Length: 181
Image (tube, rainbow, N blue to C red):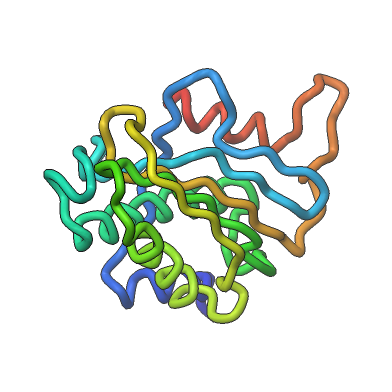
């Protein structure tokens, strides 16, 4: 019997992989409460570097924006996998918020974020369909084209949301240790 998750198998079929954690600042990449996991904003990272720098509608076109959204949502999934260890335990992607660094008046913002939304449906099927908000912004950290945050629901309860006597969840301790490497 294979231990590879169904979502990991689909990623491999698409020629994609989850990036390693890239958390660099003084906040948590996710917070889990009960069955909900709130994932902080993720930029498009690959090989440890920010990708797709620039403004959509200027130095980047719609195709670049869609690719940036796909890459950013992979970072969100990497944080989710760290939180619950197996993406198959997700029962639903609840909400995705997308921020697109674009020229003033750029209108195809939903099409940019479709790059991320379509990938989530490819990976999770109906569980990947979600509510979404997309806004155009004047700048993003590092000059990237897209930043994505999300909320997901997990069937696992376990350590999610349970605080130990040290005031941190076992999940938080695991993620903090992973980011120190």
